[in-house]
Length: 175
Image (cartoon, rainbow, N blue to C red; front, side):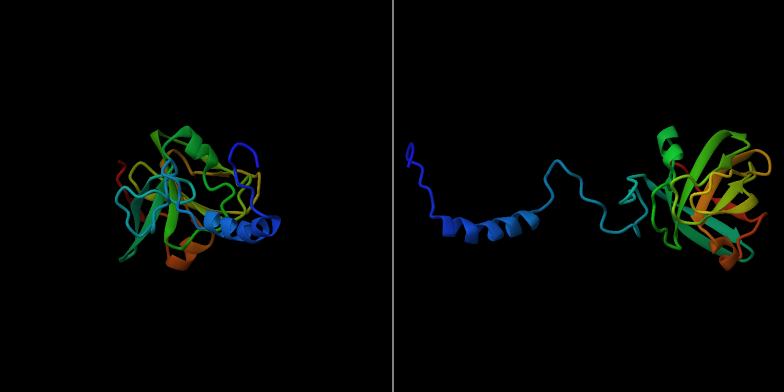
């Protein structure tokens, strides 16, 4: 003993250690950490649990149907540079949009992106100009057919599955 401290017998320490680990593992998130949203289904001022980007609804009007997507807003240069890099999945109702002003030709590559994406280029009239399906990890650029105001990314092959095509209208509002 030293200074009034009680030292437990060694066998007590061995039994108490697993309990301490279990308690620590089940502790709630610290107040300084922000817990991820419970669901991305609620679009109003929600944030994506992986990217932390704000989510807004983007709707593609294809023929006679409206197709809504919970869409991550890549508004900053940093968010646009990262895009969907390192993302291992993208649900069929999820997307990312890269708005730009003024309209300009855009090109994208798939460096560090392990999933296939349909890259949808949107003209100033908010209609789809062209759609390119990009190959995972490819360093080859896919380009817009002229100046665009936004690029919209969804799971690779989904545009064809849903009947999304050039000329379709895309609706969104930025915060």
